[in-house]
Length: 258
Picture 1 (cartoon, rainbow, N blue to C red):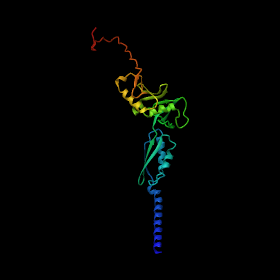
Picture 2: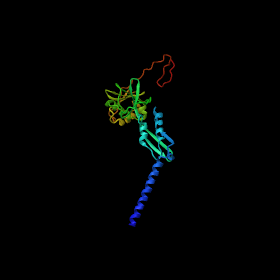
Picture 3: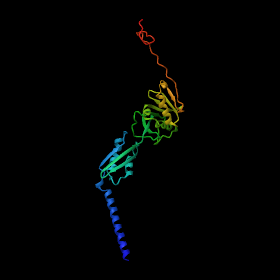
Picture 4: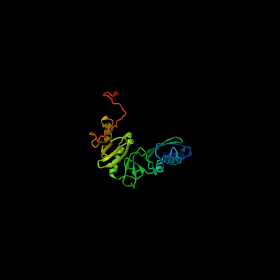
């Protein structure tokens, strides 16, 4: 009996200590002693960056470094299409660092005079101003939902997503033609991709051929078979109008006196 009573008292004491510890923890984790007061936000680059930062700042100030509500932070930026997710790190007792992971636009959908950024997977980023160096994808009718559903346009976006940054920024338009997906480069040949399949390999082949002097003057590169690129449609050599006042020259380029 004595042993049982001692065991009971020990168990009761242990339960009391555990309850006090849990209660103390619950009080501390939401206490002003660990309230978030210093917030650093990074990763926002779009035209809605200021609104995203303000929404995150307001949500974070209702938290502590011991009680981060990740769902509340995500809900705060849910209205902003540029944000894919947020990553949070806390430093006891008052500092919180939030990294915004943005959706990457690869092109701008053009309907009339409007340009709307769109991701490589077809998500339409409404409410964001499209960067000027994003290539244009022209549409005959507006996209009413959150995503592009037209297969031909999705193929064009797949090509844009696989593009190396320098070539993507050099692209003026990504269109769907009878030849398939065609990228129009600024001051360069059209790139005929055909489909979005093996787009990365086709871009690699395009970069290799564009670096070769023999491709100078080509009006298009046919990349439909990445291992066998065809450069064609060489532009005509511009005619030079002779200067009537110029003296004739010899074969070595020296001026010949008349």
